[in-house]
Length: 415
Image 1 (cartoon, rainbow, N blue to C red):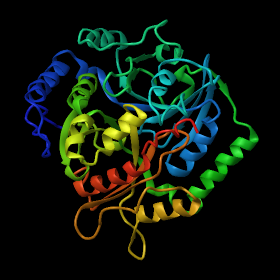
Image 2 (cartoon, rainbow, N blue to C red):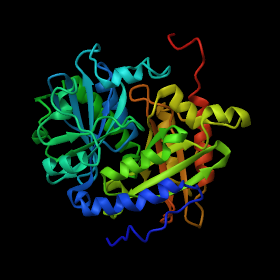
Image 3 (cartoon, helix red, strand yellow):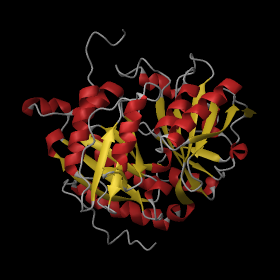
Image 4 (spheres, helix red, strand yellow):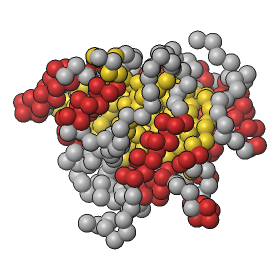
């Protein structure tokens, strides 16, 4: 795929600062000249941590709500791991849970700072792992650019310093990590996660039952893969978060749009080296247009900033692409999937938004937050080869729905 970073004009109506406009091309140029562009490949895995007793229930939930299926489980020094796959060319999903609920590292420390994250102190989206060719050279190059990495003794979780991996420290702007690896994530025994452990007969039966639901209801073939991953950050850190991310991976700033009704902007970054976003999902950053203390003058909605203040800087949702098409009697596939999940008891925040008639467009919806991961699952159908990535009206409706579900009621945090 031929793509000229330097001539690309980002889409959108969000005005960026002179600082952002100056440094974006400089970061692209340095990525090329320093070799980062050649050393880092597509996203190969997504990493999520859950509570000690939530690992298996999270597996079951992901069976119902996503195309991911369990491949293998491992017992490490401090954590248990479950590796899932949806497609050989798409990122794997690594779930991990500390063996002890009293385990202490960055995750419970940062979660305890926020009122709606305290109740699940071990639960957090960790970050992504990208393919790499030479970890030593890559580390040295990025450290020269002031990117910090974890070394043995720096972190209580040895996963971040295993052979064949390099992980950054959590970002000051997003609290997400970026990882790199030379491993083949389709060969789970090569990942060095620990001793392989087998599921019990009862556990396997529950997974088989969840898989059968997807197959029998005919929704599983319609769930294709992860379309994008969306992180919420503070208003003043939007540009820093984007530029930091683009320093470390071969993505480009696709564009940003103001969502005026919700007083926020949606900022999209995509990998130009893949022919399908699901092979290396887009990374989206959402932020308020103004900080909360300034917004207090205008009193505009600010669900994005409220989310960060209540949960912390973190991933907000991951989107599953639904195969474009009609299920029956003109019902779009995304409507069929969502209605089937609703009948199964999966809660959603609102109705499906957007229209798919004769013109290219989008239909999408948010689930409620998972009690296991705290993540929202979005379902998105890109109708008639729609390539605009999102529509402002849809985003406004989804943001409003999520905001209603993410309120912090003072005095009830510890109930």
